[in-house]
Length: 236
Image (cartoon, one colour):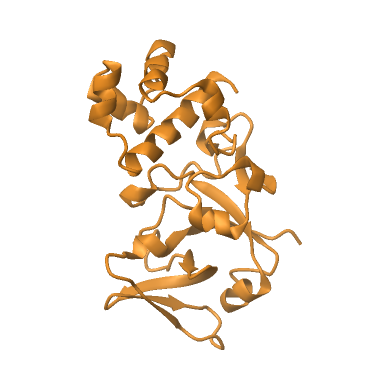
């Protein structure tokens, strides 16, 4: 694990602890003696920590390098930070795509290699709770998932989900976004509307019904939207 990988894994672990409520940026600033603005720049990838500052953050959280090497990240640096090698996206089980903020290495089925820059231009439209999630993951589409959205999706294709885009705002209006949506323990691919406290899932193929998901109390659409399907790749 090189310095950049260590830096990114520490950033993700720090966000995980903040999201769980066991840490805050102000508390971390006090523990490390670093300015809160410096901590914020680190968390939001605006600036990297020096080796000395990184060591302070490790000590403040009682972490060692060995903890981060087993912390559950994929080992892939973010795609936008690998321009010389191209974009690399982990192919994962659908359950991991839906539920795992950080993708454990043991569940990664393969790596999808894309030309440099394919993913770097996609905008961020995420909820606060998604800040610490690994952004891009790929899943294989089953027949039952693909047929309602045919010909947009093909059976057996790979779909790259942008998990930092769980807003229902259209990327290119009036064209609707295609989303991966969590429905119970299933992942559905649909066009999505939010009406009267319900998610309305619309298929492309007319022979399939519109589906309705009632939101639980305190639940928001962003909780069920796994991410926008930003690329669909057929392997056939």
